[in-house]
Length: 243
Ligand code: BTN
Picture 1 (cartoon, helix red, strand yellow):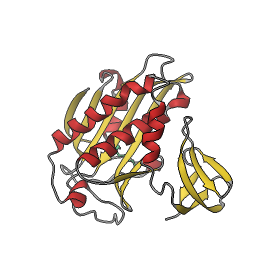
Picture 2 (cartoon, rainbow, N blue to C red):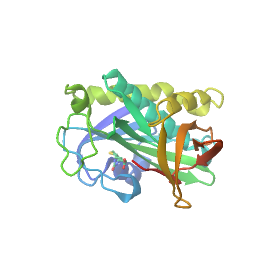
Picture 3 (tube, rainbow, N blue to C red):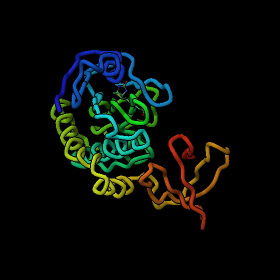
Picture 4 (spheres, rainbow, N blue to C red):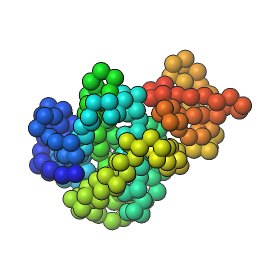
């Protein structure tokens, strides 16, 4: 993979999507400053310039190689890579399904994956990642933390990104190996926030609140929550945490 650092850009995801033809598969666009960082659900991703990792990985797939129904494997891969990176640095991350990374009850990383589909397969993916590294103060974000706040150490951004990208690259071949990629279910499930703990959730399709225990994820990307004898399965945006 090739990392390209930009001094300032609106959003690394927007830049990658705007000029997708110019960026070969495996390009990583990283920015010291994002002026219009984008988050999930149309939110803005705020981050102090020069303090954190904000980058997008461009991947392109030959036709039929990654079905649209398999995009969750990308999520498992990047969440695993971010978590491994944070563990190496001495923090204890968990993944709040589907792809927020938490330390304790605070968010340290967000992921925004945007896919270009061609028929029923994925032609390209832009995996946008924001990891809070050296930011200490988060105005108006009571829920945020950073590696520096968790470990008490600052870290240079360039080697941090190199290591994180190397971890992602190491496991990328699993994406195309149907048998071996099942191992990602285990590793990703093991990271899940509130796994094995009774907690309250909301079924976003019916509005119903219930108490259940997250058990893990399925090969098709669904989250499995046990409510007594009943197993509930949820896709992205179908269930919410009540914290
Ligand atoms: C979230 O809402 O949790 C997702 C945040 C994703 C932020 C990253 S920062 C790099 C990339 N470029 C963007 O504009 N967004 C993603």
